[in-house]
Amino acid sequence: MSGLTPEAIIQALGALVGERGLLVGADMAAYEQGARYGAGQALCVVRPADVQEVQAVVRWCVEHGVHLVPQGANTGLVGASTPDASGTQIVLSTSRLRGLCEVDVANRSVTVDAGVTLQELNEQLEPHGLWFPIDLGANPTVGGMVAANTGGTRLIRYGDVRHNLLALQAVLLEPAGELLDMGRALRKDNTGPDLKQLFVGTSGAGAVLTRATLEVHVRPSQSATALVVPTSDDAVLQLLQALERDLGDYLSAFEGLSGNAMQAAIDHVPNLRNPFAPEPAPDFAILIELEAASSKAYTGLDLQEALNAFLQDQFEQTIENAVIGNGHELWHLRHSISEGARALGKPIAFDVSVPRSQIMAFCRAARAVVAAEFPFLHVVDFGHIADGGVHFNVIWRNDASQPYDAAAVQALRDRIYAMVVQQFAGSYSAEHGVGPHNSAYYHRYTTPTALQLAQGLRRLVDPRQLCGSVDFGSAPQS
Image (tube, rainbow, N blue to C red; front, side):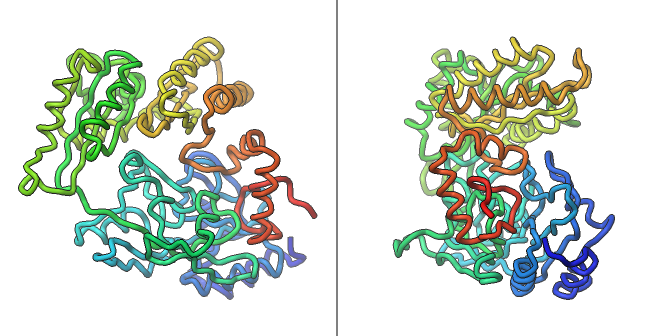
């Protein structure tokens, strides 16, 4: 940390970004508290208005040894975009980097500043019949999505951010303030290492992302949705394989919803009804979505008719009940689960993935662990069955038989993550990335050789480790 006083640091940074670009005191509150985890105290918040101001701030911070934490919309769920409790870190917000959103319709790409949000991006793309189909329960910035490598509910059709990233611009810590453009608006470019991937999924460590070029997609002209009840756990993957065989060109989502998850949403989210009424919500259901850019007029294919015929063929084999209805209503149920879970009590969230052939077995095993070892907790699980991801949320209910106990929560985390990694060859962070909230597991489950390599890469771009809140590698050497 610099020998300068806090006041001198704030004054110097204010001179670089101007009055609008500097926040102190109570004005920093929204930048110091994470969406779910992570709460700290910043020395100040700087909000550069353009790339040149980002360069100036980074250059000054490196020169004076001041730690900065890049932050987009602060919607991350592992605390990676919030400062620690020291009061010595500055938050570098990209919220004012939003001047550029340049659509190349023929190339089906868009070049966009890091501070533009997902909603704003899609609003700009809509008049061109295009969209960026990363479907999330939040409205992050483009820079944040790249840093976290977000996935979402339609990953099986469109991939995650990494698969849709054509080019990236970043301000480096070494050389200090250097602007690096990585890649071009090309789908084919085999001219050496793909350097932009060094900064994807690293939670803002090592550089400040300032601009991205993304591949975008043609908006669907038709879609079909159904909520189906499988005949058994084994039938879930049989149904998925049949869908991929018969309608795989159109399959965009295959989402699993437990009965507990659906009921939490139905009970606590206004204007949300049980689609199976008057019957209760089933123990498990699958939300299926098909999408096609091509219209029925040219292909003769009606997706809803095709889905209906498929489901009819699957009745009694893999399906025992189905609701074929308003897609908006069914997706509203899916997207309301998190809100319903929060209303029950304190969520203990697990964003994990396993090989999809093992996902139902994992869910059974994890539920059994909670029932046997933590019977006072309530499981509310849902997830992306087709890509092996599951949000295995456990709720410490407001009416639980014993009061909230941080030690019990830690024991549960250790138990579930060990099961995911060691028993099911899975990941303890499928979508949310790595931040202070789960970095201990990164070090626990990453091999020493991989840690050493990650640390070497980090030293190349940020030798003093002044950027970001996570150390990807071994402990820094002096």
